[in-house]
Structure formats: structure tokens, C-alpha cells
Length: 79
Image (cartoon, rainbow, N blue to C red; front, side, top):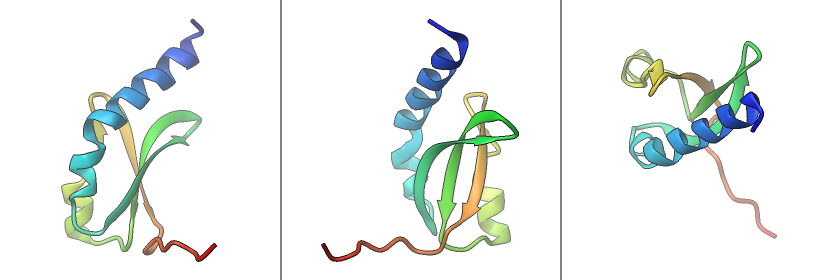
């Protein structure tokens, strides 16, 4: 299995293990797999960045870098 594929599978496993816990944090509206500086990472989407939230969200989880993106609230659109 190519190295990049193994790395993505590992990040998917880390995301699955920690997503529910991360989503319980105030102002966290989503967790995804993304890329930072050319490397895969976990992306935490937050409604609004605040100093307390920046301190509460870990910089790494199980060795996987965490990136924080301010997205605002997510809303479902009518079909």
C-alpha cells in the first residue's frame, strides 16, 4: 500500500476515534480531513475563533496535526 494511502487511512482512524469528543466542544461545528503545508491533517471548523477555544483544541491528536478554521455556523439549505 502506498505511503500516502496508509497515512490517510491512519488519519481517518484518528478522526473516527476523536470526532464525537471534539464535536462536544463549544463552537466546534465540524471535523474533517484536510491538508496543511502539503501534509494531511485534521481540520476543526469552528463558528468563531476565541482565545479559550484555541487553548482547548489540541495542536495534535495521536501525532496528527490539527488545523483550526473559522467557518461560522453551518446551516442546512432547503432542497
